Image (cartoon, rainbow, N blue to C red; front, side):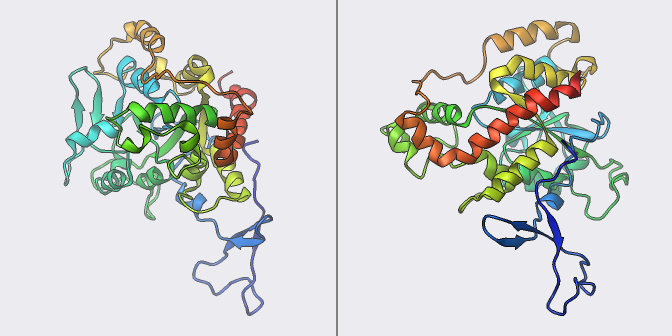
Length: 349
């Protein structure tokens, strides 16, 4: 499956009848998108080249874990497992409190013993700054946690230098290794709405949510519109087409180890086994290696950011309103479940 391709690439002839032999970029491979009837040069794969392919074995010395954090999918709980129970040094939004404009990159130990790198990977501006500080060549972090999957790939760009070449600070180039936890998009949207009504501490909070019904929200500009497909393909605005969904499917399949929130414990165990966390010491963390099991049990028994809210039946008004805005994400989620249960399960047998 990992050797399969979604699109047919063709060489497009120029006006002189040849196929661009005089072009400084030589051959231009373009993609024909059947539904829209257009040829398009997809830059996406080159831009995502800093991420390892799933068909490539995990390299613990070279690969830097990148957790693609889809909101309201158990990511904060998984973050606690990684940072507190295993003792990983993380690069996430917490580091923004300790950013130095001109560097250097440093590890900051928090009061609870957790450790972060002093970068902010939660937004494009912070990621650009991390790239300027050559974060992608740093051996300080064990894991990056960010929603900005596409943007984060930039920190692993080699700028024409070879992958094994060292930078000016003696650090070898690294590549990102994506993993993620996903949830049914309609359940996720419902959870997000009720969470944002109360979450005054979140940067996404707005007073407009307070007096809004979920039916109003689902039909408003504020409701998410195929969030996963957009973040995977970097198509953050405008109309999405079948080709965007197919591209997102290919990206998820080829670049990310998938977990499913409904199978949270099994997913976390798969991550632990695939990435060899159990045998990795992560020296200096807040929990001793012999106490990890108890720590994991405690964290999973009391998940973070759990927010009680009403439920809505599939096929009902609320469900269908949200489905109109998230049809591609729902299809992508079904593909993610296929990957989880029928493909990637073989990676940890």
